Length: 313
Image (cartoon, rainbow, N blue to C red; front, side, top):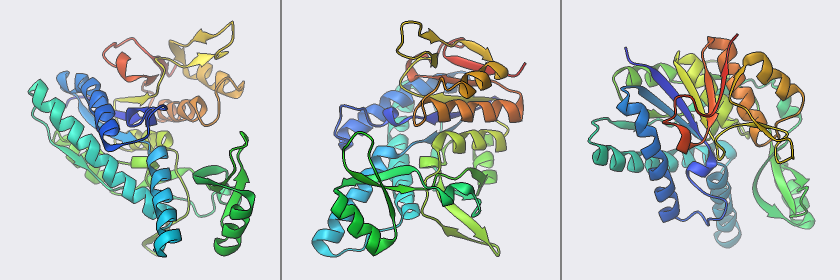
């Protein structure tokens, strides 16, 4: 059977830093990314796509906030917001792919699965929420919302205000991963674990959503492991990872061993909230499978030697 490739799309695949996030901007960005991904399809590979939802889920929370203030419409919890963005972003990816598949004369179906990802209710992150989400508030507003809802707010280090923080637990299991594998085995492109997946916990054979955010790179890495993928790519806005980033002795990382990747991570070479979680996700995949993980940008995908490539010794 053909190779199975899992690709985790970064936020810039949908929304660039200088953009407002209009529908037109996002569909143009995602179509450009889908065009780069067709290189895998031309090689006959099967394809699974994970994606982030940082800007989009923040916008959804702002919309809920406006509805609550102006129309007394109830705001929805975090797991519900993630499910909303999974559907909307999946729709954009499907539109982008359908356009480029038609242009390239490639016959593939694109399917989006609204995906739950199980986390451990005893994960220590639930005792120490640190992931900022949603809009910024004044200290007075944050205190009032905290009193009303029990939410936790932290002050932004850049002085932009106070922001709600939620746990970011480790993904344990991807529900319906067997369905994802069945669809890819049949040749369909599958979009799954959007925004890291809808965070749920299991109890007595049932699932319940929780107020949390799962890292999309870790969730995509788990999807790659659980589907026995041949290759795992993490797309970001730089062609390679760097050590001594933005310093005079900055050095791009090409093909490196698993041990080298672990050492650079332990040495603090990668920034939290940026390259560090990507490196952890890549390391987890290589450790679990012995196969290669790649961190790069969309423009380098066609180069089979490009990007930062982490391999088992």
